[in-house]
Length: 490
Image (cartoon, rainbow, N blue to C red; front, top):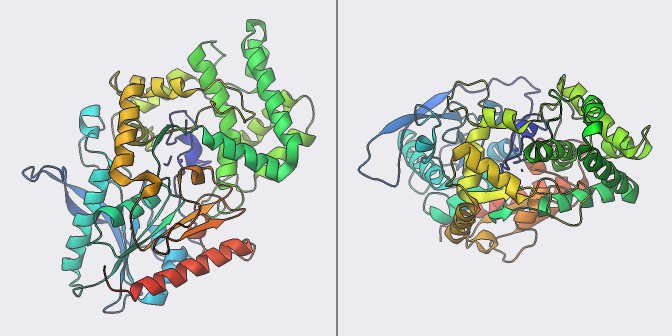
């Protein structure tokens, strides 16, 4: 369950974990409140397989350009696309655009292979998904950067700065690690650096956020609700009223997989709200932007009826703002969507691609295996592993995933990543900080840990109501960029 990569909205529809509502932290664009004209789609001829020099197959990768602020001799800013459709709105708004205007930067955004309109292969069969990996994505960035330098006749020594949030935040840091001659510096926001099969810490951070917002009352009522939920799921005579209470699309069928799917879907109501909370969800166009941790805890602490009734009220509130008529919870429904191999499928939200990456590289399954959390224990690691095997084949068992995760940490270094001129930004409310850096170890790798803020908050346009700590973080990032642009490569 997740993840990097992610709405409570799209993020609630798929995630870097394997549950239907797992949260990967997908970075969604802010609204274009000033109606600035956005740049058109552009296309770059990219290699299919960078690991095989003799493989001459190519495909068309989408990118965007903003040269509005560019001054000859200025730097190049590169926004890295992630596990979703790249949006041209990022080309005209966000904190990185403010930095670009200050420094006269030429701006690009490159969409990640296999997401959005960037289709390297004819479909998303397992045979073709082997070309989907972070390593291939990093090579895409390097190939693209070299080609753009030539296309725009950039002076020798032009400095590139990479920007990314969530999984693209990881890519920004890894790009600096693997291709230091191509990118001068990087701004890495909410980036999980440690691959981990069982990301049970996610729910621990969610639990801490609930307690911090509303004390023990909300936490205890959530725990009581999930305890009662599990009791009723174990009693066949109570399935029908339970289905009515939570407005299930299909009658509860009673299997372990359906139980895991339902319980995890209800836990996700809190996970997604905590992950984004009040910092940036209105910028993401979230229909439920006014629903925060405080909102949910008010329902759980002061709502009518039993704790289970209050949990149902939380579910109803989020369903209402999303326009859902019922809760589609079944494991079969999830698997049917995940097995769709066509890029043109209406179910292609990026879920199949991202979950493949977690099975093949990252793990990050937000399980219920932590002891200190109130959401029960009905979506353990085995549930996520089963989804890997059912979606992509029995090869993707836990031993395979564990080995893939270990290889990823060897490849990039986890928290021990050896880089210079990379700033890592994390928020205390964002559960993803548990897989990232939260304390500075070296002056060459500053870490900004912002108390009270959520996922990728620093990347969005500033607001008067932003916390002082968040405003200060944006200013510090700006100072670091300015300083690094004055430094020679080393």
